[in-house]
Every structure is written in structure tokens, then in C-alpha cells.
Amino acid sequence: MNFFRRSKLKRRKAVEVFFILLMVVSTAIVIGCLLLITGTIIWKSLPALKISMITQTPKGGYYLGKEGGVLNAIVGSFYLASGATILSILLSLPVVLYLNLYTKRSSLISNFTRFSFDVLWGIPSIVYGAFGFIIMIFLGLRASLLAGTITVALLEFPIMSRAMDEVIRLVPRELQDASYSLGATRLETAFKVVVRQSLPGILTAILLAFGRGIGDAASVIFTAGFSDSIPSSLFQPVATLPLAIFFQLGTPFPEVQERAYASAAILTMIILLISIISRVLIKKYKKYLIQ
Image (cartoon, rainbow, N blue to C red; front, side, top):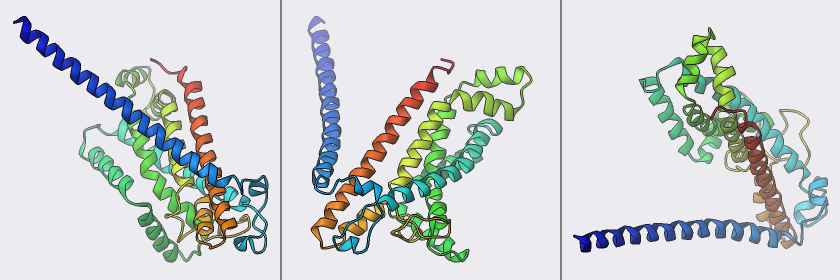
């Protein structure tokens, strides 16, 4: 009996060691990929990574190796992603609150809506670009900041909605019941209890969608157009960093290709900054939650 018990303990110990080793190796691979990608981009961007890259717009002959920077693409990316994120919030938050407070969590409409979000999340961004192009033609719009914003908002909508939904579903039902027992309406409970309790997760969902929007090229290649100047109107074409990288890498001039890697490094730094802001905000608002 003792022999079989020791044998079983050895097998359990071996399985535990195996999975611990697997977790360590997986973590090392993830960290290694991150360091390899960022290291390669930064190394290739060093010859062109100058202050003029973020303070100047492209000058004449920029894509032939002349002077200038990608300020137009940096500002354009923020314009487009910010507008798309605001539109997505206006669409996502009401839908998610309705699913969690006004319908039963296991109802047909709730399950079908969540299934739809999952399908929309998995659709390639180039499909959103093609669909946005159809909408643009239907509305009589040209490639512009407005058309690109609408397309990216459609891309961000399922990402933000699904992430918010998962966070809000974690809010204990007891908190809602306590709010109702004090005479609060469903709308008051939604914004004063549920949103407040899940605020760190909601902020994470918003920043996650913003990061996806600012870094996507396929969804705006047909709808946003491209311009070497900063747009002053919603109906003007807009440059973005992903499109700038795409066009710069497509030139045969080594100087311009180096600028493409510099643009990629700038975009990577922006995404890193968004991640840091997300962590700081979560830490700041988490202390107000009911544990």
C-alpha cells in the first residue's frame, strides 16, 4: 500500500514539475518575443530616430529621401483613434449595461448578442475596411478622417463591448439588489453602482480598444486616405502611423525605409505608454472598489 502511495505521489510531483517547467518556458518565450521585436525595431530605427521625426511634417521629396518627419501621422493617428474610441464608448456602454441590468444574463437575446460580439471580434480588420468603404460610397463621402473614424469605431466596438461585458458580469448581484432596496432605479444603479464598481476594467477595455485602433492599418487603408499635412476638417484625408510605415517600407530608398522603422518605434512607444497609463489608472481606481 505504501509503495502505491509513494508511486502516486511521485507521479503527481512529476506532473507538477512538468507544468511548472512548461509555464516558465512559455513565459520566457513571450518575454523573448517581446524583447526581440522591440529590440529589432529600435536597432533598425536608430539611424533615423531624430527629434525632427516627431516635430515636422513630410517636406517635398520626403519619400525620395528628403527632410521631414511623421508629425502628420502621429497627430492623425490620435485624431482617428480618439474619435473612434469615443464613438465606441457611446455604443458599447449602453449595450453592455442593457445586457446586464435589463435582461436576464442567460436569456436568448443576451447569448445571441455576446455570440455576435465574439464573431465580430474575430473578423479580420481588412473586412471592416472593405465594409467601411461601402458605407463611405453609400453616404457619398471621400476618403477622410470621418470615414476612417467610423470604420475604426466599427472595429473597436466588439472589442470594447466584450471586454466591458466580462468586467460588468463580475459585479456581485448583491450590490445591485442592495441598490434597488434603497429605492434606486435601474439607471441609477447602472451608473452609480455597476459602472463605479467596474471602472478599472472599463478603463482597461477602453484603452485596449484604443490601442487596437491606433495600431491598425488594414481598416483605414481604403477609408482614411493619406495626407502629408495635419487635417483641419473631418472631411480631409488623414495619415496614420501604420499607413506611414506601410508607404515608407514600400519605397526603394534605404533612408526612407529607416524612417519606417523609426515610425514603428514611435508607434511601439505610444502603445507602451497606453499600457502604462492603463496600469496606473487601474491602480488608482481599484482602491475605491468594494472587495
